[in-house]
Length: 72
Image 1 (cartoon, one colour):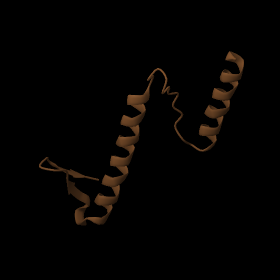
Image 2 (cartoon, one colour; image 1 turned 30 degrees about the vertical axis):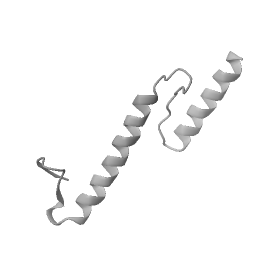
Image 3 (cartoon, helix red, strand yellow; image 1 turned 90 degrees about the horizontal axis):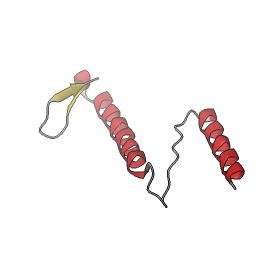
C-alpha cells in the first residue's frame, strides 16, 4: 500500500541520515533516477581514487590522462 511504501521510505531516509549517507529513491521498474544514481556512485569512487593519489604524491599533484595537472 502507499502508506507502507511511504513509511518504508521515511525509515530509509532516517537510517541514511543516521549513517551520514545519501539517500536515493530509484526504480529498476521505471528507470527513475537509476542513471543519476550510478553517475553519483562513479563520481564518488573517482573522487576517492583521486584523493588517495594526491595524498601519496609529492606536492599533492596528479595528472588525469592527457589533461591538466590537478592539485589538492
